[in-house]
Length: 294
Length: 294
Image (cartoon, rainbow over all chains, first blue to last red; front, side, top):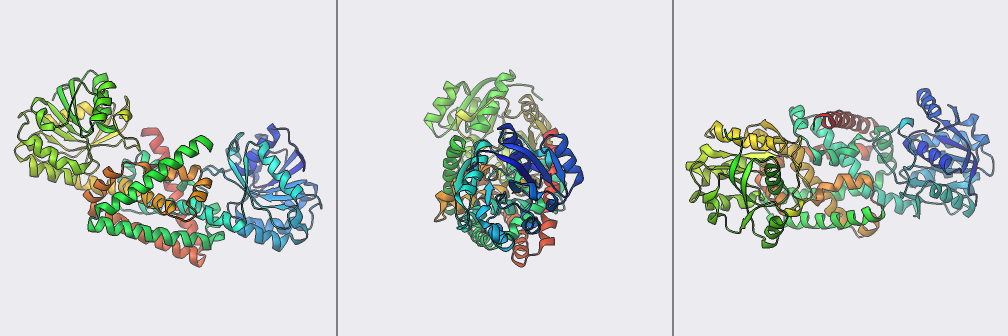
């Protein structure tokens, strides 16, 4: 296991990738950071801000120098990136990612990096935000946050432990899950609420009296809809990448909502109280634990 | 119009009623505050904390001394309170409320306080929170918050202006709406998201792997579900009191969600992006305005 890394190539220099680079730099765990991205303007800002030391638009041009590659783009771009990596990667180089879905990343790794699977470490840092771009990169983003590793059967423990150690150097706590278990859990606790929030704000925005509605929206609305300010392309990719699990959760939610709608419609006071009580008790207990442990 | 009030009777000494009393006390706009409630323990705390100067469990025993009565209980208790008030109220006494729905409060006022409508001022301070009880009462809760007045045709302007001036003394900004317009707007921006959040947490709490899900829930989950920690009885009353408008919003939301579900199911990437883009743009624009103006 390596405690530090020579050259890091980060594809996608935004909140997630940029904050990882900054975290490693502050901890003295990285020698040189190369940022790769589609937007020259974003790369220029990343250089100016000291998030990266060098930039490139084509990952194939720099991947051969990488000791570690972090794919921190929307999942939809990862296949092409892996394909570009496959021919240039040094044998010892570790490939990891920061995607919010893991079944699809595992499948892409198997498709594009088959000879390199021992050095592939699928990972998911749980530090979402509605911010994006290099200017969103920040020290301390991963402080006390969870990072879930979902190693393949083929992943060697040295690669897995190195990736874990680097995230720990950024302040994160490491968890391990099987890829499918990861995707089922995150469909429920993250992907579904994002979809619900996007749908809700979209609905309000299309109302004839939308402006009037927005005038009177307050703190409850603010918190409930914060995640609807998230990156549309990233969340489209997540919704499609984790389609099966997300559709399962959507079906369950729709059924729950229909029951609640029936209770409102028929004035079933007991049913409403029971649902609201269950929800409140669970939310209060969760929040106490979350505030204590993160 | 009176700039201050002699004796205030607050029915329901929780976050909303208690913070109104504290705000008026700090501004020197009230002489004496009598707290009325069902829980002796909560009343005792309200006395200890200086939120009220005197307590009573039966509103009929103290209402005759009121210059202003604020009904700050869940809407479901207001009918009985108004009935108790009706026989003891002094002719000059103003009756106002802090209910989140207004059509039903207006109907209750018409039913129980018919001879007194000139002094009835239905109102809604927009300062929700998941906190409740006398210990939640706080100075400054209404600072820069909106209070919506929905006066009746019969309400005299002196009563309406007095209630407005008292809320302004607490730091609030006054808006006026017709009761039905109020209820339609708040069904959309407040009551629907509360129902959606309660339904969501209830659904997660009932999953076989609920504990595991809660383990990985993070900041997005925290914000999206904050309002599911709200007062179950209060929200049951709101859902039933504003049933028609809420069912309209629920139907529209369900249709939006079904379209989104179809887009996920068929992999309609363009549709997902369009919805997410619309939602994000609206949320970002709203938040900028809200942070500036409240």
